[in-house]
Every structure is written in C-alpha cells, then in structure tokens.
Amino acid sequence: MIGFKIYYEKPTGNVVLTIPENSNNNAVQSTKEQDFAMYPVLQARNPETLNFIQLEFGQYQADFQTARSWQVDTETGHILFEYPRFSIPLSTMVEQLQQENEELKVENKELKLALAESAEAQQQDKIENQLAIAELVERLQTQGVL
Image (cartoon, helix red, strand yellow):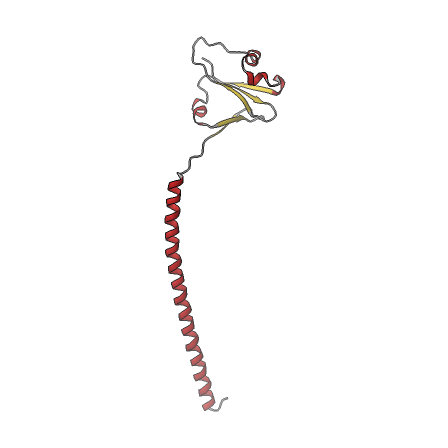
C-alpha cells in the first residue's frame, strides 16, 4: 500500500501533480524517473525545478477528500490544505435581508416619530421659556428694576 505522492514547484510550493493512494498490498513505489516517464504533466517540466513528498498510506486521507486544493510550504515541507467555505444559500440570504429591511423600516419610522415628538416638546419648552422671560421682564419693569 502506497500513500499519496505530491509533486510541487520548489520555489512556490504550487502542486503540479498529486498521485493518488494505491491500496494494493503488492503495489511498488515508483521512482522520480519513472513518474517523469509516466506523467505528461511532469514531462513538460524541468525535473530540477520540482520536488515531491511521499506520504504514508492513509496519511491526510480525510484532508484530501474534503480539501478543494493544497500546496506545500517550501520552508517546512508541510502540506497546506484549503478547505471549501460553506455559505448560506443566496435565496436564504435574500430572505434574511428582506426581513432585516422590513425591521429597519419599522425602526426608522419609530425613530422619526420619536424625533418629531422630541422636536415638538422642545418647541413647547421654547415657547414656555419665552413666556417666562417676558413675564419676568414685565415684573421687573413694574417693580421699577428695569
């Protein structure tokens, strides 16, 4: 049994070829030269610019099944998996946004009403203050202070 073999570009870590696992008990490990003779994607490359990682059978098996891509960290030699990002369906997102929009419209209406009531109360306070000032001025005038 042979694990995945990953050929990657030495400078970037970009994967050029991933050779799948072989679960046959009699499977024989291929050499780099044999792989270059067998796979056209490798034949098109300079062997000096590529490196490979040979994994144990079953190593990272779940990661290879779920990841949408992978590359190699050129400094550590570790495989970096990129997993799919699951998002909510567009129709659900539209429904949520419509609901949120309706809630915001109601809140906006309530805030406008509260603002109008506040402005009206301020106007009433202003009138009351002006009347109080006028009354105070009148008293001061009648008492001869002014």
